[in-house]
Image 1 (cartoon, rainbow, N blue to C red):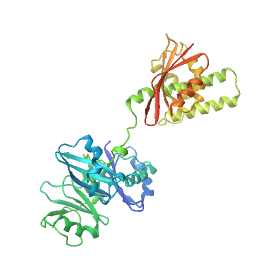
Image 2 (cartoon, rainbow, N blue to C red):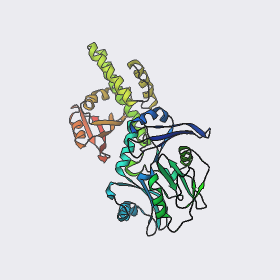
Image 3 (cartoon, one colour):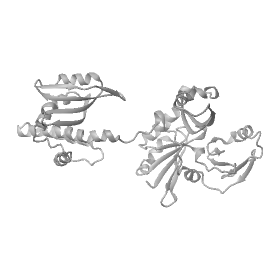
Image 4 (tube, helix red, strand yellow):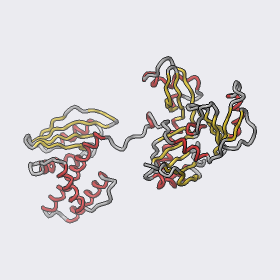
Length: 399
C-alpha cells in the first residue's frame, strides 16, 4: 500500500481532528484538512479505503518517561510494570495503558495513557468504520537531531516538543513557558529549533527552523515509525488466522451445501412453493454471511459456485454416502445454533464423519449429541476452552 491516511486525533470528542493523505510513490501530500469533531470522522471513511491508517495521539494525553530497572527487562517486569511507576503517577495504575517504547540495560522508556482515552479513540474510529494500524504519540513523529537540539512545532493552541529519539511531550500554549522553566533549570542554553513562530520569548535558545505545515512535518515522521500504542488489550487483531482459514473454507462450503441439498429434497418431493422460496432465501443469506466480500448472488449462481468449490476440496466423497449422511445430520445442527461446524472430514472406508466444532459452551455439545438420529453414535474428543468458545472433535458413525 503506497498511500497513508494520517489522522491526528483530538483529546476530546468536541475538538477538531486533523488529517492528511501522503503518497510514498509521489513523495507528496495528496490531500489534507480537518473535521470539526469526532462524529465527523465518518467523512474520512472513503479516504481510509485501500489506504493504511495511522493515528497520532495528542501528547497532552500520553506521558512518555524513562524508568530505571535493575538489569535486563523481563516478562516478569512487564507484568509488574504499572507498579514500578505507581508512585510517580497520579492516576490509578489499574486504569492506565502502558507501552514499552524501548529497552536498554537498567533502563526502559514507556508511554502511559488512560485506558478510557484509548477506548474513546477506538470507538470514534469504529463508528466511522475506520481501522487504524498504528497509534503513535504525536511528539514521537517530530524530527529529532543528533546534535542535542530540541524540535518544536505549534498545532492549533498546543506546542509539540521532541527532546530526543525517545522523549517528547505536548502542552497548551499558556503552559509552555512554565514547563520549559522546570525542564531547563540546569540547561538555560538548550537549543530549540522551532518550525513555527513563537509568539513570545521563551526559555532556552530558540532558532527558527524551516517553516512547514505541522501535519506535513508529522506525516514525514510517520514513515518507518515503529512506535505503536495498539498493544496488549488494544492490539490490532489480524483479519484471520491461517490455521483457522484452513478449516473454515471447507466447513463453510459444506454447511452451505447442506442447505442446498435440503432444498433439492424439497424440490424432488414437490414441497409447497412457499417453503422452496424460503429455503432459497435462506441459502442466499447464509452464503452472503459466509462470503461477505462477494457481491450478492441468486440461488442458481450459488449452487453452481459451490459445486465447483466442492470439487476443489479433493473430498471425493460425494458419491460414497457423504452427502446423504450430512442430510440426516443436518437437523441436529439446525436445531442447535450454539454449535457451529468448523471443518468436516469423511472417511468412506469407515463410513464416519469427523467434525471439528466450535460451541458457545459445553452443554452445546451435549445437546448436539442428544439430538442425533437413533441410528448414529457419536464419540466426543477432548474439549478446549479458548476465547469464550469451546472447541472439540466429534466422530459420528452409524451403529
